[in-house]
Amino acid sequence: MRLASGTVLGGAAAISSPALWASLHGELPVDIALTRYLVSVIIVWAALSTLVAMVGDAPRPAVQEVRPTSPPEDEPHGDEPLV
Image (tube, rainbow, N blue to C red; front, side, top):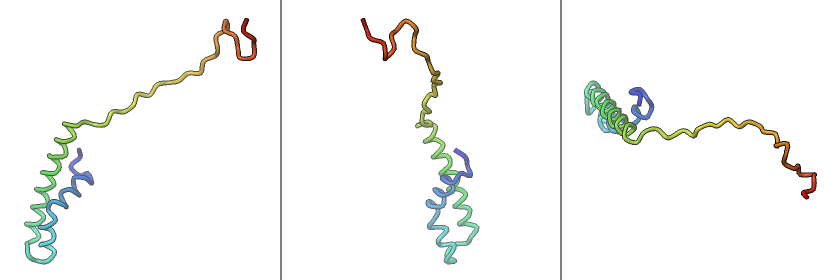
């Protein structure tokens, strides 16, 4: 998980939203609100990285190459009668 991904930054904003909101209204200094946000970024990144390490990535289906085949020579084709 990348530290600057949208999931990490959005999750940190959600967790530290009370501090950010109080900072907008002047009830909390901006530097304290930003410090709480940066601490939240590290906590969310560590939590999501641990989750991804435990669960793992989704398996990708194996791609198999399909080659066109011609019908065998000794078998009858659809227009020949079977004896």
